[in-house]
Amino acid sequence: MKQHQIKTRELTLLAMLTAILFVQETVLSWIPNVQLSVVLVMVYGATLGLPKASAVITLHVLLDNMLWGSFSPVTTLPMWLGWLTVTLIGYLLRKAPLAAIVGGTVAGSLLYCWWFVPFNYLFLNIHPIAYLGADLIFEIILCCSSVLTVMFCYRPAERLILGYYKKYIFSKE
Image (tube, rainbow, N blue to C red; front, side, top):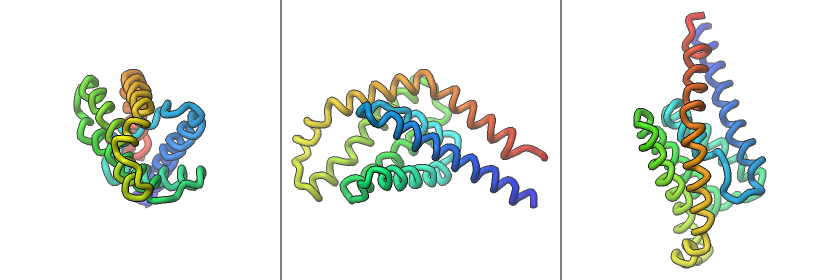
């Protein structure tokens, strides 16, 4: 019975973290590439580990594409691969100093954007240089937004999730 209780609490946490990721991105969607998604995904990768964070990411991508009606290989696949890349960077940098995490944020933001290049070329025949040129300002905005949120929100979010895990998931009761 205790094992079942732990699984239920952990599932509840994963559902809450998915909802937070989805809602903040939806609320901020009117400002192109300004979001808290990168910091949240990196913290999820660092605190939850790859399998659980990947489950959150997969559900988020499905919900996001359902909401915006954008299920297609041009959108869904690169978005999923991009967020998984950011998750992996968060996981790999989980014990790194904040300065390295900030650097990983820039790399993750750019890699997220660049996952869309081959899919737009293959399915829409948009030349990669033309795509990158048109996307450059949005990549800069995403990087700046991500760096700022990681600098100020990464450690508090990390402590919050780890504290929840310690108190509710791994408690003796």
